[in-house]
Length: 180
View 1 (cartoon, rainbow, N blue to C red):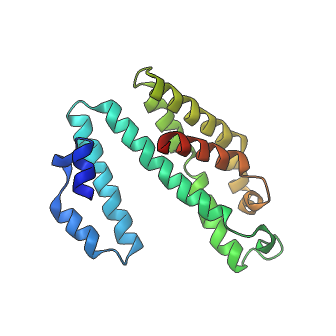
View 2: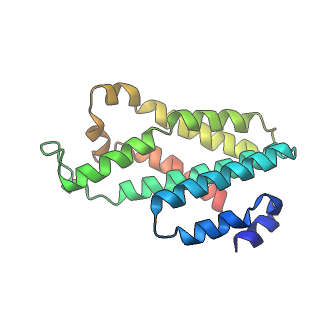
């Protein structure tokens, strides 16, 4: 399936069969899979950029990044808010949720960079819509005042009902546009 998809989008020559085998043998380890996927994405991005397909590389990066944001925000959304306690920051739900929130919020600068990259790719309808949607996401990140909140060690504030709704809704809108 990987080879078929790569062929459809014109990047089949960037697929390393050894990496595919390595991926299949690492299915039980999330960390190994993450490293392999990161390498594969980097290889594909490099191939697209070297072959003068910068716009395609930007679109692949946007889709990949968006899916990662969607997965993390979906996991955060599944935590029952009533189980997250400011009085007990070591509770199991809170201990699991805060690292996911930090991971999501740490994507502010990469999102700004992705937005800038998309702005440099021309002004066709698809790119313009992606620029608009990623600009919305950048705005949502900026509203959260992330750096100051983390400096005050108040990450639990982001787990309160409604705090991340704007960000998560913007991620959903971007993903919906990409996946149709």
